[in-house]
Amino acid sequence: MIVKFFTHGTGGSKGVFDYLLNDKEQPDGKRLGAEVLRGDINNQALLIDSLDFKQKYTSGCLSFTETADEVTAEQKNALMDGFEETLRAGLEVDRVSVSWIEHRDKGRLELNFVFADVDLEHGRAFQPYIHYQDKRRVNAWKDMQNIEHGFTDPNDPANKRLMAQRDNLPRDIKDARQAITDGLKALVVEGVIANRDDVIQALTDGGFEIARETDKAISIKNPDPTAKRNIRLTGGLYERGFKFSREVQSEVTAASEGYRAGSRERYDAAKQLYDSEIRRKRDYHQARHGQP
Figure 1 (tube, rainbow, N blue to C red):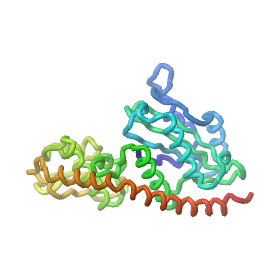
Figure 2: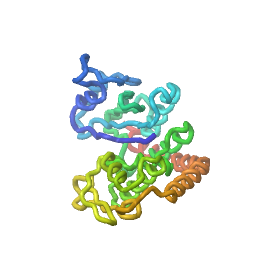
Figure 3: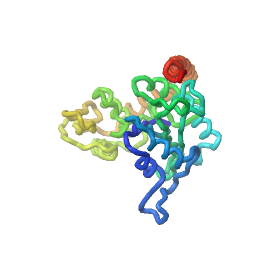
């Protein structure tokens, strides 16, 4: 499971709920595989549209490789409860408006959330997620859930292919190169990649545009529209003579086994970080929202 934040909405609610629930191509206008799990969509839409804040709502999803049927109703409820508590961090449940919409149409489960950016008790602006303040807490919660429920962990070296997609790519060039390379190595282990042509095909399938090829490197266009330079990928994987390597397979397999063996330690570390960050965020919410 990974956590994605899509929109800090500055317009009305129509766009986000149209995307989550509707499909003009369907005879009834409804999106296939979409189901409201929690919330009153009509009332929340009215609430969002009534706000005079610059940011009116926050949306995103919990994204799984597992199908909707592989995650039980009890697990879904526990995940929704836990995620809401992680973002509320000390605020009572009736002070925050949130809706959850399940998507099944991609062959896997997505639990989509929409928060109205308002404290319902005082009418004060409430921002559920501020990246630089909340990333560590949300990631710690996500790591705990993946270990506890046995969901596919994108940090497992064997699953790094999940990060070799342009939409998930880190903005830092060095981190982006590493994420792409780790993703391609995971595909080597799966048998998807056996030579350089397969590398290029995997990059293309991941949404990347090949900018240049040389004997020793492949350059791709940076998916960040503000970036001016291509991302140059170097190393054995990207050389023209690359062929399937059992060394790559052994490297990833050993790293994955070591990663899984340390799950107890990683859970304890994530729990310690989560508890610390929750206390810090509770103090912030108490100071900001504790009084009228």
